[in-house]
Amino acid sequence: MIFSTFSFLFCFLPVFFLVYYLLPAKVKNYWITLGSILFYSFGEPIYIILLVNIAIANYIIGRLYTKFQKDNRARVAWLVVGLAINLGIFISCKIMPDYISSYVKVTTVYHIPLGISFYILSCISYLVDIYWGKATIQKNFISYFVYLAMFPKVLAGPVISYQNFSGQLENRIISFSNISEGILLFGKGLGKKVLLADNLYPLCSQILAADDSSLSILTAWLGILAIIFRFYFDFSGYTDMARGLAKMMGFYLPRNFRAPFSSRSVTEFWHRWNISIIRWFKRYIFYPLNGIHKGKLWLVFNLLIVIAAYCFWRGFGWNVIIAAVFYVTILLGERFVWGNFLKKIPRFLGQFYTFFMTVFVFVMLSHPNVSSALSYLGVMFGWGRYPWINNETIYFFASYLVILLICIFISSHFLKHYKESLYLYYPKIYHLLKPMVIFIIWIFSIAFLMNSNTIPFLCFTL
Image 1 (cartoon, rainbow, N blue to C red):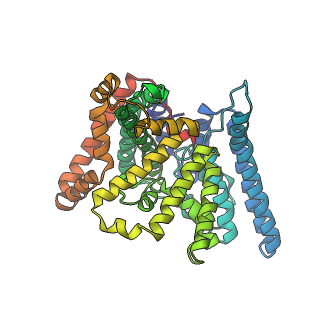
Image 2: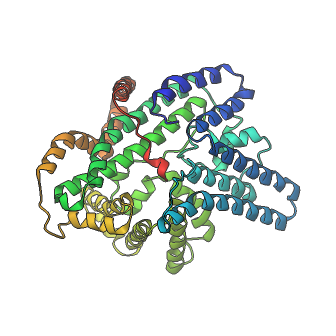
């Protein structure tokens, strides 16, 4: 089930929350579990069996920890077993099908289980956190299932460690303030998805489907700009909707994006982009290897390990690997060579540099293979007899210039600056305008949904 559909907005959502608010606190988690199973089954009825079995396996392994509190070897053994089960399922369900399809012609279509990239990270977080002693073992299976598969976050996060989430399972605040803030946050995300990301879909699909020889240089640049903004507003829109739904239920989920395009370096960009995933890899891979305090060579080695783990999670492919190596090179360059220079130049130059570096990565990730990505880069930089502009360019600019300018303004630091200034100097006006603007976004989003087809979230492909 997709958040931006009428079946979710006008059937599932009102029924779920009406019952949720009427139920006593002791049974709310049971209702969340039932709602999450129904939600997941709507899109993947077969793979709900996989999800439930993974939850049972990790819950049992967690409970086995209690029998070996004083036997560290047994605890390590069960941790290894748990990690092997989770990684084995992940490899068999996601990595192997991608690998086989790359080298063997298959006649049947295989669908990767929705959300497996995200809920496997939650499974590992649970096992490692209780092994480290940073969280207590969850004795209630229903509570554990809520952490693993709560419907706002099961498909695409944001990912949160069990340590930071466990306290909310039995003690959370459901207030009018949280409900209203959740509704506003959900509306904000709905607008990002429906009004911005979905409206860029025709432009992205047409340019990616076109033969590179028919493109002009400006059309290629327009296309990659649309691809970047579509992915950003699609993913950040999903995150806002997930966080809004969770807040309406009394839960806190972390932010996943903090105005990444206002970054003045690639290092800063990765502190603002897909934050929960980056934080997970730091917490469970980079920091345990003591990645900062053992010298430059050890830092480089640990970064390579983290990048390899990220590529494994993201899905191996030469385009993914090249993009990852490129980013590692830039990150190391900023840390040891030109990082101080970036701090001294004007902010807009740093933002231009960061965006330009991001362009290469998105070209790589938006194409099915390296050759098609390099061909597209060749058009962008005029490596061949490509015209600067053609009739198609004029049409695309006339059709999409306004929405692209809106995307640039919303994703820049200017909007954040104006919001903060309004909140600081005119708080009453800010609190009056915010719900009015979100209400208008709700109206326009619903109107757009009535006249368009449902477009799945891009983050479901991760």
